[in-house]
Length: 142
Length: 142
DNA sequence: AATCTGTCCGCAAGAGTTGCAGATTAGCAA
DNA sequence: TTGCTAATCTGCAACTCTTGCGGACAGATT
Ligand SMILES: [Mn+2]
Ligand SMILES: [Mn+2]
Ligand SMILES: [Zn+2]
Ligand SMILES: [Zn+2]
Image (tube, rainbow over all chains, first blue to last red; front, side, top):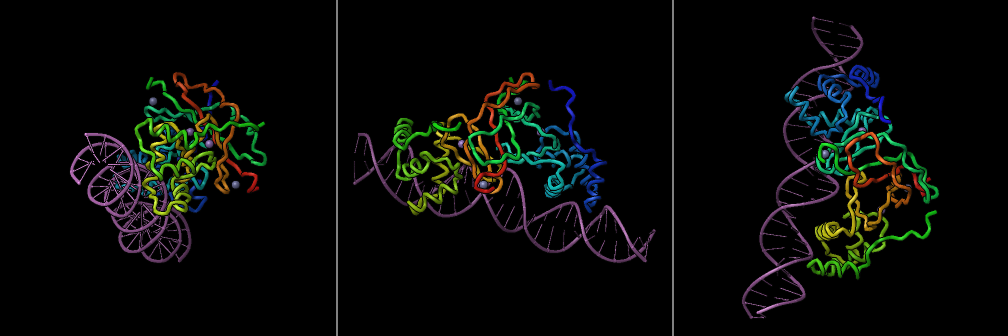
């Protein structure tokens, strides 16, 4: 069963409050990015976010996109994941989950499965968390 | 239980034959790298391999290390894995396995556990393979 | 010996990301 | 409102990792 999945993505309004509470200013650039990230399950790169943001706010800087993503990551509002594509992908879904990556089109899907098996055979290693990456071909590419 | 793990790492002699069969030459630089990679479970980066290789063969080029690693990867004798550290790590252990990464010292340990749970909830996605990354603190760093 | 083929190496360039500094602005206080 | 000030934005340079390129080089073939 994968129905009724709750995505723990903060709304732009919530992020606005969080930023103000952290002593950070809420600029038009940041508001735009908050909006573009809300309920965004595409796992965008900084560059891809920048492209979308630019169409709505010409002149916004790629540097600002990076900066805002870093701020959000520092606040725990999103995570940065490296799937080996060269660029980091950003995930505003901070709920514990895993990923399925299509080797054909590069699409990254959220996956909710049972946790990975307990780590055995490495005495003394204390596991903080585990991440499963499934690779293969997505439905659209089959 | 983690005893009696068989590491499927080809010997320098086997790699020599494989290279000749592929029409590639076996140079002193390549022989050295074959040797450094044999039974190497440290998951080195190109740079770290280069450092070790340089101490034994001063003058060897980082470019040659990259080239040889690429050749080996193309032949399926090793895999390249990105753990998000910036540099790619190379793994001459081509047996199906997973990894535990220490967030403190960066050590990467091979892990043999049950496979990840079957992917559900993504109809139409055909899984080629899965990779589990455990993160935490290794015994030495605790 | 001349040639041919593949390799090695240094260097430049490409991709992604971060540091920096001057111009600009949000948020607050008067 | 107005003005102040610290935070932010932006463009650019620099940095890391990796790959492209071209000449030097080495081993094999004629
Ligand atoms: Mn996700
Ligand atoms: Mn391994
Ligand atoms: Zn696809
Ligand atoms: Zn450690």
